[in-house]
Amino acid sequence: MEVTIHERLCRVLRRLASIEGGLVLLVGLVVIVAWVFGLDSLKGLRPGLPTMNVNTALCFMLSGIALVLASIPHASPFKRRAAQVGAGLVALLGGLTLLQYVLDVDLGIDQLLVRDPGQDMELGYPGRMAPNTALCFVLLGMALLCIEVKTRMVGWPSQYLAALSGVIALVGFVGYLYGLEEFTGISRYARMAVHTTVCLLLLSLGVFHCRPDRGLMSIVTQSGLGSVLSRWLLPPALVLPTLLVGLVLVGYRSEAYSLPFALALIATGLVVVFTALVWGAAFALDRVEARRLSIEAERIQLMAREQAARAEAEAQQRERSRAEAAEREAQQAVRTREEVLAVVSHDLKNPLGSISLSIQLLRRLLPPGEQGERMLKHTLTIERSVERMDRLIQDLLDMASLQAGRLKLDLRRHAVDELLREGLSLLEPLAIQKGIALHTQPPREHVQVRCDRDRVFQVLSNLVGNALKFTPEGGMVTVEAVLEESFVRFLVRDTGPGIPPEALPHLFEPFWQVEGTGKKGTGLGLSISRGFVEAHGGGLWVESEEGRGSTFCFTLPRASLLVEHERPPEPPVH
Image (cartoon, rainbow, N blue to C red; front, side, top):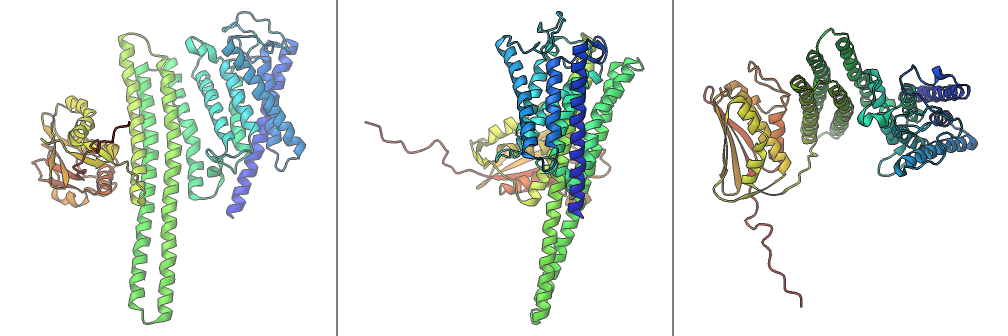
C-alpha cells in the first residue's frame, strides 16, 4: 500500500512538472510573437509595468522544453540530450548577460533577435534582461543540466539551485502582490515583469516536481508520519504569511485603518497562527513520548516475567520474544518522534523566513519622522515574535537531543567571573526595564570550570530570566558563584513570591507549569537546563519557601588547577 501511494504521488507530480513546463513554453512563445508583430499589450500585463524582453522569452521557451523532456519517465537518450542542450543554452545566455553587467560591455546579444525601440530604460540597456532575471536563468539552467547528478556533500544540487531561484523570483512576485509599482534605489536592478516572476516560480517548482522521489521532495512523497505531516504543514507555511500581509495591506490602502493598526493586525495574526502550529507539534511530540514510555514499561514487565519463569524453557523463550518485539516498537516510536520533530522544525523555519521578508517589504511603506519611528516599534514587535517562535523550535530540538542521549558539548576551560559577566550582559536591560536590581557576586579567587560556554549561557538565561519574570518591581535578583572542593556552585536567588510546596516535585518535568501564576511559556526551560547541567556532570535543584523567594542552584566541575598556558618551556633553537 505504501509503495502504491508513493508511486501515485510521484506520477501526479511528474505530470504537474510537464504542465508547468508547457505553460512556461507557451508564455515565452506568446511574448516572442508579440515582439515580432509589435503587440505591446502582450509584452507586459499593463502599461507602466516592466515588460518581458525577447531574450527572457527565449530562455523561457528553452527551459520549458527542457523541463517537459526531463519530466518524461524513462525518456530516450535523444530526449535527455535535447533537454541538456536546452538547459545549457539557458545557463549560457543568462551567464553572458551577467557578464555584460559585471564588465560593463555589450556583447551584441541583447537585441540579436528583435530590436527594442525603447530608449528610456531604467538601466540604459535596451533589450537586456534584469540582473536578477539573468541570475535565475543561470541557476535554473544549471539545475536542469545537473538534474541527474548526486553529490556526497549536498545530495541533489539541482533542488538547491532551483530553490535559490525560486526565492529570488518570490521577492519580485510578492512585491507586485503588495502593490510595488515604483522602482527606486536597488529595486531598479530587479525590474522583473510580473509574468516573468510567475514563470520563474513555475520553473523552480517544476525542477522539484519532475524528480519527486529524490532529495527534499522525497520527504513529501513518502507515506510515513513525517511525510503526511509535511504535506499538511507546507501549504499553510507557504501561503498564510503572504496572504495575511496582503489582506491587511488591502485594508490599509482602502483607508479602513491606519498603518500602525495594520502592523498590529499582522503581528497578532502571525503570532497566533505559528504559535498554534508550534504548540500542536509540542503536544504531538509529548504524546509520542508518552507512548514510548508506555512501551518501555511494558518491556520491563516482560523481562521481569522472563526471570520469574526461568525454569520453563518454553515460557522463557516466549517472554524473551515478546520483550524483543516490544523493544523494536520502542525504537520505532523514538524514530517516529525524531522524524516528526525534524519535519516540524524544518517546515516552521520556512514561514519564519517569509515573515522576515514581509516585514522588510512593509518597512518601505513607513513614513519618515517621529510617526515612522513609532510605527517601527510594531515591526520590531513582529521580529521579537519571530525570535520567540524560533526559540520554541530550538527548545524542542534540545529536548529531543537530551531524551535521545545525543547532546553534543564543546567542553573548554572558562573563567567563572567571565561566564557570569558575559552570560548576564544580555539580561541587564530586561532587569532595568522591569525595575529589578540585578546583582552579581563572582568568586573572590580566579577559578575555571570545564564546560560548554553556550549551554551554560542558556542555563543562566533560563534561570535568571525566570527570576526576573516572577520578581515584582522593586525586587532583587542575585547571581552568586561559590567555590567548593571539586566543583563550583552557582546560585540564582530572587525576592519573588516563591513556589508552592505541591509544585516543587513537578518543577523540572517537561511541559509542566505552575497553575495560577499568569506567566505562560513552553514549560521546557527548566527541564532543558537540568539536562544541560547533568550532561556536564553537575546537578540542578531548587530551594524555595512560599512568600520568601526562590533559589535555584546548579554545579559545574572545576577545571584542573593547571591552566592551559602553563607548559614547560621548549629548548631554544640553535
